[in-house]
Length: 211
Length: 313
Image (cartoon, each protein chain N blue to C red):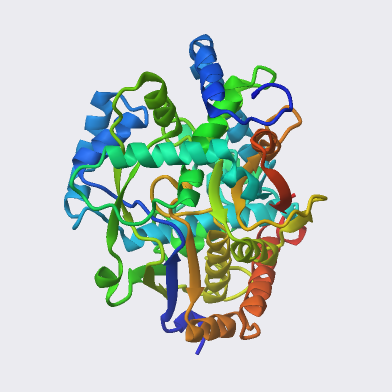
């Protein structure tokens, strides 16, 4: 792997190890980090520099990659192991697990990436500050679902920015971002996009509602 | 019949759950969940105790309220109206986004704090004047954007909501919870490295694919002037409601817990006669695209009437 530089992350164990080794170093700056991101978020709301962005990624390769399948299988296995005598119908589909675990994986990407700014992990919310919710929501979707969502946004006046990569995919990762200017010339969606690309997800569309 | 005396309008929507929705759980699970999410044990206990009465009315381990859907539509409308206003270059249009000089999140209230009082009321008044939502000249007070559009439609302190949301018939039989277990990324990885035991989180969720019938009634708009400036109140309410539904359908606003983890995604569609009613209220073509286009126009006209150059003195 590595979680550094621009290479794609292909080993979650390594990612976890790297992030764990940084956690102690970062923990004393935790509140400061939350406050910095929180201030950037509220200041963008006050100044009106925010928008709603949908990032769409071709996700077949990511979902079927061995390290992702291993992660999902482990999660399913551990969940099944912990069950008592209770039925557990549905919702064990891999896609649902991918969306569920994505937030945690991304958070660890931010923490482990020495070249980046670990404060951005708080773009995914923090339970230490009540009501400081995640700026991004994840969903694995089919092409039809993507079209439905994009059409809904376009009807509201959103700009559909088709990107150069037009890879066809059976499954897509849809990321809804309550986007904001982070005060350093970057938008939250750019920071998230960078981290998602490190995970091997290929951006195919970006839909922006706002200025 | 004038808009002032218009009969209530009943709109019916079908809500399809595109992913499971966690809308409540028993107190023990709730306390455990809060601890997992980072709450201290004592804070988790306090938080659960505070909501115990609410949770105890649940049946079969889940709870969903019609008012949650109203809240969902309201917050979607707040984002939409504010964003539209910013895009038109009209500045802040929604009270919860207004920069009120550090007094927190102001809310529209009737009567507005127009006196030269001290503290928050004064700060609020200054913020309203600064944003030109209220123009005060001599003994004349003009309300350009007060109450703001979402408060005008969904209500504010002292101003009754025009929108009532309830469930359609057969709601309980249609919506059943399912239970499943979940682990977070760090738990999955820790279990591997330490070989210890993890206790997966048991979640009671409304199942994917279930449908809920939602009745939305528009009523009590009053005369044009207080709630709307450029059109009858019902027209504005219909426009705001419809556009908010589109934003919910785009996945930005979801139902229940764990929204960022893929849960609570909804698709709201109007029944056929509801689309016709909306088209009539808005004076739009009787199809979804026509209603959306006209709703956008109605909202933009209203924002210009409230905050455009012509409305300012």
